[in-house]
Image 1 (cartoon, one colour):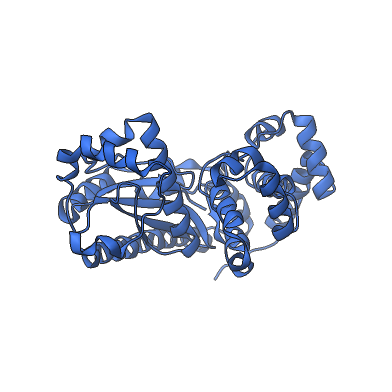
Image 2: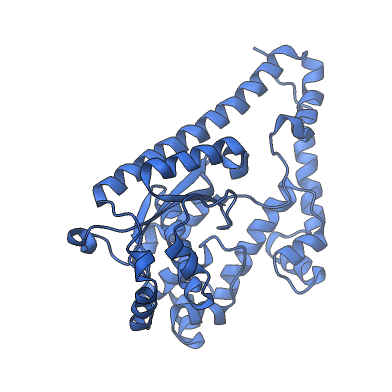
Length: 352
């Protein structure tokens, strides 16, 4: 399993990114699954720089980015939307083998021609729309300098970026597989397991087997909450899922989510439990334990570090919660997984 920096985090991509900006007129950057930029921001327009430099307005920008990235991730296809300033942006999901979402190409900062302005809805409307218009007027000269593209042109560019992204992911996956096949065909049977272990631990091969963090979102996990029964949830509960899975490396409290959804804590608690079948705290606890299992299986992070990363008050409480849900302590769970993997390595691997 590789991470988004393996594909886009290099000088060659950034040169290509700059060239894409010259051709498409769209500003472009790459973000990881947590929404953090991993490349420079090419073609960053002055208007958006000024807006994001304003602490109050930048919050709306972050919410728009989070919502756009979430929708692209959920649908696994390009998502085109207008921000609170009616500027068009695109989120292109980067999905690799086994349905793992590892990040997104974020592009945009363009306007639609006047006759097409109503073809896209604003993804998020701030409560004080008048203040937004006032701020836009202050920067109207820079706003008018933003490139104007038709929706058809934007859709064509979005598709091009999506296909290019898929091609790069597939090629990366094939190159890793080819290296493994070559090694397996050249190394004698009795040496292969040892060589495979070395390969997994050798950073020179650029195969990221073990990580300190989970560097992706599992789309199957997301779809448990955003498809199927999702259509029957109320708008408030839908917004809860969107916020929790928006790509922020944080587990929001019930109070925080209630404020985001503009409802009372009591109302949100009742409606969430009624529609989802478990309390909000139980839901978050289950997500944390799912991530803890992944971390214990794929990294050597300490129990104390893991408890802190998952926002537990102390390691003792984390161990108690983990054992209650899984039946064993985190240390015993890791030991069981390692023994299981060791048994697999001792099995002979046929060489073609």
